[in-house]
Amino acid sequence: MEAKMEGGQKTGLQLKGTSVAGKEMLKQLARSDPYYKRNRPHICSFYLKGECNRGDDCPYRHEQPPENAASSSSSGGPTGQSAQQSIQDRYHGTNDAVAKRLLTSYADTQGLAPPADASITSLFITSLPQNATEASVRTAIVQSIPSLDLQKIKSVVHVAKSRCAFANFKDRESAELAAVAWAPGFEVDGQKVTVKWGRSRPAKAPSNDARPAGEATAVAS
Image 1 (cartoon, rainbow, N blue to C red):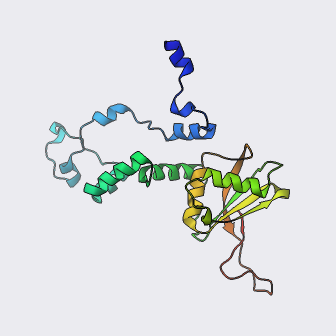
Image 2 (cartoon, rainbow, N blue to C red; image 1 turned 135 degrees about the vertical axis):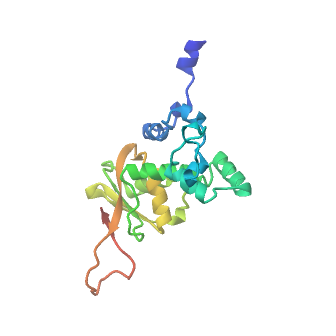
């Protein structure tokens, strides 16, 4: 029985369709803090105010809370109906602020942190397969971001000679969603590709064939 369980049953991470890159991302995002920390005494609120005079006899911890916990506490955090809604969102996997924060942080560590220039809405894809086409690149993009409205994709420009492509989005939010989705790994025609944020081409002096104002060409960063 145990042998069958070990050899025949698979965990959620091992189910068919889960990519190796996805497994690696989950490993990196997994909580690594020791579980005993959950049983530690609460932080002394009087200590935080500078009013605790019990010293070593105080049963509560005398230390500053983590930055994220402190900011959550100072803002009051979600309460009442908003707290209940947050729980439901996390359960159903919709509007999950915690998951979004974790994935965004992971994207940052993979070199996909959003650039400061908010006008940049393009992602640069390199190392495409030799036989990749604009259609196959577009299909891979659509399939990799199922939550994205197709209307948000402005254009996909494939440069076959350089084996690269530009994914241009209509707004920054959609581009950031794509960056987060592609952080664990992105495949085109079964081959892993490299993704970077694009950047706007430096402005040139006006000419007869100049592009319309506000439209920029993305190039590799």
